[in-house]
Image 1 (cartoon, rainbow, N blue to C red):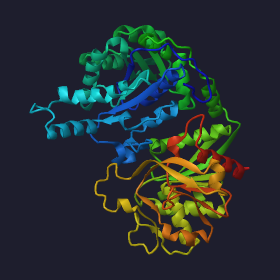
Image 2 (cartoon, rainbow, N blue to C red):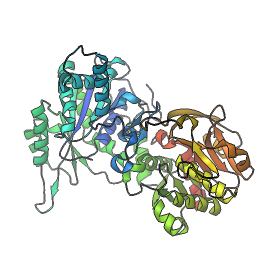
Image 3 (tube, rainbow, N blue to C red):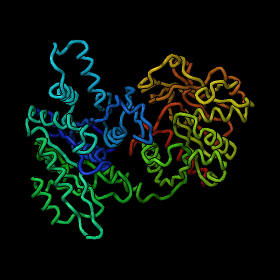
Image 4 (cartoon, rainbow, N blue to C red):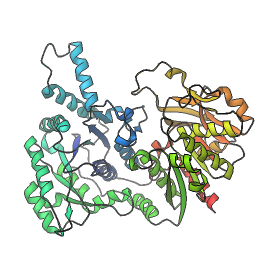
Length: 549
């Protein structure tokens, strides 16, 4: 196995696939996903083949119908699965290509079990949480064991230990570890060590109670990842080791990283996490090859230049709503040895107060995806400002539709042109619902989802950016550019520079008389990695630097 940017030595062959279960305690939002992804980075760079999985206790079948304010970004996989945003961390931090089985929810588990019951698969038995639900959860974990390609499966359990929703998953893990043998599986517990300012000391009692709760269920953690605002002193480490029944070296400090989440694997390595995990699971491997990762982190922390980029969105106040976009900009910036200063603009404020107040002086404007008409007119003002001021523009999904509406109204003279999503009665429906979506009544997993091919026209900015004519990108939308207006809009300088292979769907648009104006119907942010930034983001930052200079 050869990963780009570094060389590795293959480990000694393992006859048994190993399992690492990541649980969380004390409070939510401790960063279990980042801990799992960071461990995956370290193990992969030791030469191990790693897969990652997320088990979520909520009853939604998937997060696709959830409001971003509640759950953050919906991350789309290549096969069209709408998943938890932690899977974005998994794909960015490792070379894994994930699919639907890598994200399992209680909703999926119960749906499967109830479908089996309706078919009569249980032969008249009473269907219960134990064994039927727990057996189905174990099946979701065990299916990865059918692949000899994977040495380690890291499975994150959503929620916090003690949540009633998570109990079936923890019970399933208890049973699973018994079945595969303790030497082939381990539990990594991510927990909080709060600092009490008035007392001036760290408190280990919440973690002790959290581990005690796990042990009541029959689970003993082998490693503690201790999140803290302050360094954990030796006395606290010894106490955690004693009362949580783990070796001293298994107490891993995880203070908040100072600059970027990409420091986290390096910090865990310095704490010896990967060495201890390999010892417990019986892997004999070389030290992880992290030179290129360190170089990337240094570029993020100490860039030679900086650039201001405005993001005009409707979920700006929620950090996780545009997580993949922020990370993609970081990747692209580092490739130019450039730091990104984000100017986060609420589209509704822009709608009320105008674009110039918020966008004057920025080097580039990015409009992300979204649903519903709230803030749309503000985004249209942003697209107009970009076109008229010749400021670089990158539109993603809805951002492409916004650019189309703005051009149709203000350049082509199509009065009140709009998307039928926002105005079903518009006289100029330049954005319209996909024909295949007309009779859709069930909203879940029914959009155009997953990887689709596109063909780029030569002699276009898109072709210059990608350097090829055929691309594969991930989609998540119901509405498209109405190709009835293509000819008339192209006469005015609006270019459809990429389409679906059959030429019926517009995938990329650009403006003829603009230094850098590109918008895509897909979501390029789902394919960017730290040392392999997506071409659209890399090209956008290059254009922003040129505009700023």
